[in-house]
Figure 1 (tube, rainbow, N blue to C red):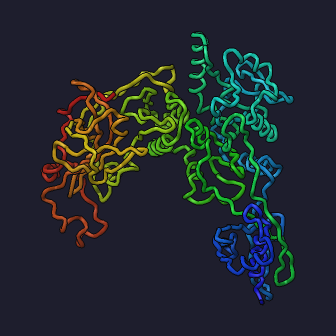
Figure 2 (cartoon, rainbow, N blue to C red; figure 1 turned 45 degrees about the vertical axis):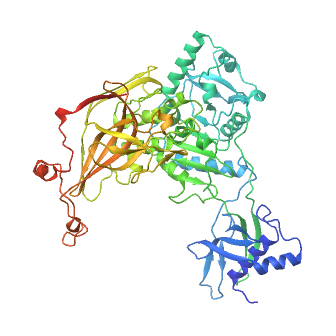
Figure 3 (cartoon, one colour; figure 1 turned 60 degrees about the vertical axis):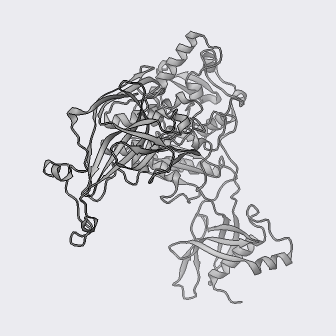
Length: 633
């Protein structure tokens, strides 16, 4: 059979796979008969054409199973392959780096040093770092490991690195600093006493020429059983002080080690690889030899690792200006200007890890900050915590950054008021969810379209939280918000209505089957299931409109759904709803999409006085002077 030069290469690649040259993918045919049968039944496909029109990966259907193989040439090897004899047709296979046998290989660390040097020389990622050091650091110099207090070291200088890791279950060995062990930690820590994850972090620092390391469990005082009241006070004060500095600790780090595969202090950071390459020699039409490499195609489109599901590690990934992540099969780099990994297959907007890396970029103004903060909370509330009281401390660093950008007052609580996202349980298998109108509502009063005009229909009188500590970002005892609103009586039901058949973690969410003013329930999103929120079918609740959008055809009201706590004016939020009232005189046949208006027609601002009479039959009768003043706790 006569094959073109390129087809001849692909034939060699297929035969290499069938002969078991990539055993992690296919062990190889057992004999010639099986080999011939596989080749007869083989289905070959290709994806991912390069700009030179060569396949950088191939899909093979081998014995009923799909095998995806990457084709590449190492950067130091010949990359041009001539496929025509007249010399004017050349193709180039993609250049990719080779992996070492594990993520602590010489190749991996050479790559990490290259990324770090490139960032230091060409990026401005560290330009906002200040002369700040955490109160305590691990000193790794002179082949020793000891805890030091930076405030007591006059000549202290040099960068430090942070570690983001999993503590693991209590059954695993843990190394912590307490009021009883802090002084011995400063005298020195024996290598054999240090858990494997911490040993690996120390190794990373030393191989990248960094002398200081910050690990939360050792650099912040931790609690332990049977503490005295005095020890509890000292430990609590130390945690509050260090937690209030969390944003500065991570943002001023030289880089942060993100131990993605760690499941405990004892598990370690490094991982071995299964993606070894196999080289094959190929010749083009001119007789020039090239070394082509093949390996199993890698992919970062994988479920989150254990570390990536935890609440504390969320801000530990986003706050630093530089992160080196040690993943299941390669290492990756994130800084304020670049996100790259060893395998090069991390591009594309659909890659959730890349999207998360973009969240690390601080917004440029207050308007962007509000949208950024909403996105931060949406992702954070999908994470898990071991202790509910950690909900706000684990986000304190990002909260500090948000306040710096907006100058807003930060109000939230560990025993949070019901109007706060923090009131809902996100501890491991939580049954509750805080619904974000910007994401969840198709008829969204906050994302109006077609020219519909929004207006606030409530008044904020006062909001307050009582902090448990001196800092405003940690645990809070409680809080309230006083609003001026219209209250519309409604009743809980379980029959889905309109677009409101939502569930929370397997529990069917309740809905509203009656609203006193006769408006249609477009959406009703329960914060929790009936049992979780202490509600029953037929219970009376109240809809409190906070924003209304007006169009020529209808009024949409975004409402807090509230449960009265007593006969007085205290309420608790239990959900969010959108109520709609149609314009009774609206003629849909002559609406804003009629041909003489065209598709670009924008409705007028119907909130102005000149349109008051036109909308009075379907708009809320809003008067800030006659609102009910209520307190939401």
